[in-house]
Length: 405
Image (cartoon, rainbow, N blue to C red; front, side, top):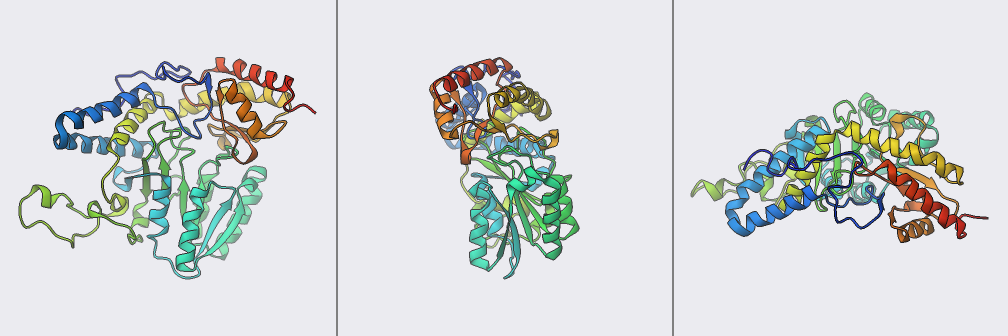
């Protein structure tokens, strides 16, 4: 199978075009921060993988493994990481758990978390704290939006007092605020702390450079801005951090030369092989091959367009609608500086956000209402021509009473 087997290169992505989403029934899809619908490229890749197994059975497994290797390389490019430092996992949570339960904690180690984060980046650390007697410290994620400099000063104060690890999302799921990862990473390095980033709301829509940002660990799932199938993700582990991990959960594929006893004859069935070095030790068993082929195709489209161009396109969409909504009484959470912006535009509407999301859905506009915010999250298929459609729906909803005094 050639190197571009599932890369999506037989499909041409175009900014602002839904041509690769012919069956999407929603008039305006603004919910990529929740889940992205699969493109024609993704659907074809998954079906081709299924057909491969249907026609060849186990003989197709070699091609599936080749797809995994290409996918690792794609994901590594998206975060400017060496491919050997990347593992494929089931989802964002799995990656966080792999790290939280594999670090050699000492009782009393302090871990700094942000209140307001999605629970995925909280619960695993709480589990580790219960098991190992860790001390959890809390800051407010919202403080970084309202007064970034003051929040960074508070963070540095805590780091000076001694922090083992800081866990933070690259982009806040409620407000869309892009966190100052490079600054936080530099502070962590300066004070000897490790830095864990949940990047599911960032990877594929905003630039990520794990080395420049001082990131030790990064976990992300595939079904949001990467626009792949559910049930797949990636974990990055910096080589220096990999030396500290002690696998708490491992399986047969966690070992080096794991396939030797299946392919090299008698005498290779052993249970004492060393674990693979770095992130790959968490790739423990049977894998979501169909999802991997679909994700390879989706990232192929993203690479055609380029993350920087996609973000610029989405920001133009936000630029077009934000002032109109503010004029109608919406309060925007969008950061004033470009470095603080992401693919998500969140607003406090005049009236309950869940009611707004339901009313917009009835008019064919898909969005979300996490924790009281109305969240609009377009991606590369969304067109500026959709903005008047959304505004017309907003005006109709307001005319019928929602949001009016």
